[in-house]
Length: 180
Image 1 (spheres, helix red, strand yellow):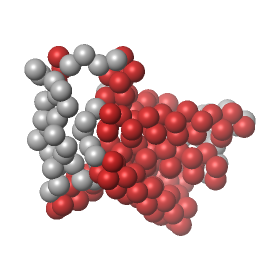
Image 2 (cartoon, rainbow, N blue to C red):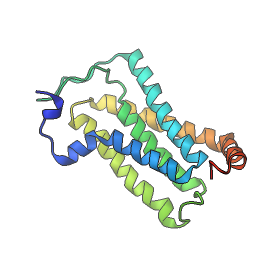
Image 3 (tube, rainbow, N blue to C red):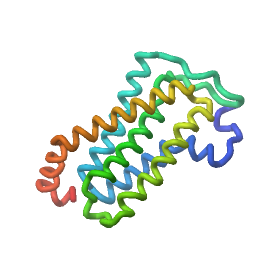
Image 4 (tube, rainbow, N blue to C red):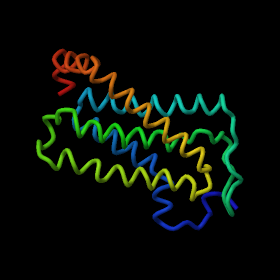
């Protein structure tokens, strides 16, 4: 039976397709704000994902056997790319909301700082767990992915606050008609 023919509960189908949802929401954030900080954040998510895929090819650990009705994925499982990338999203969003200035296009209130982590953190946890529930990864593969995502997000954030944000300010001043 093909993977698409599996009968999954709606909430699990939603979690299985979150890569498209998260990518779309990120693209909308970039288009709405044209913020160098948001563009940097998105490039961090892509970099996290690509670097995990390289690590996967080096480790070459297989995925778990497919669950009933599931099609076996042909890529390796260690570490989980979804887990690493969504953990990057959750951690970087939390750091940005806690410590970075609010973009001028967004309301400057406590809601702007509190609401994103309240939504993103539980959603990320559900996505991570869904990788196991869907039979795509083992617990160690997911834990490795989450660990990688946390380390990558803190490193990416520290690079931003240690000087790359100045490049963002320069870009905003140099190209005000594009970046705001």
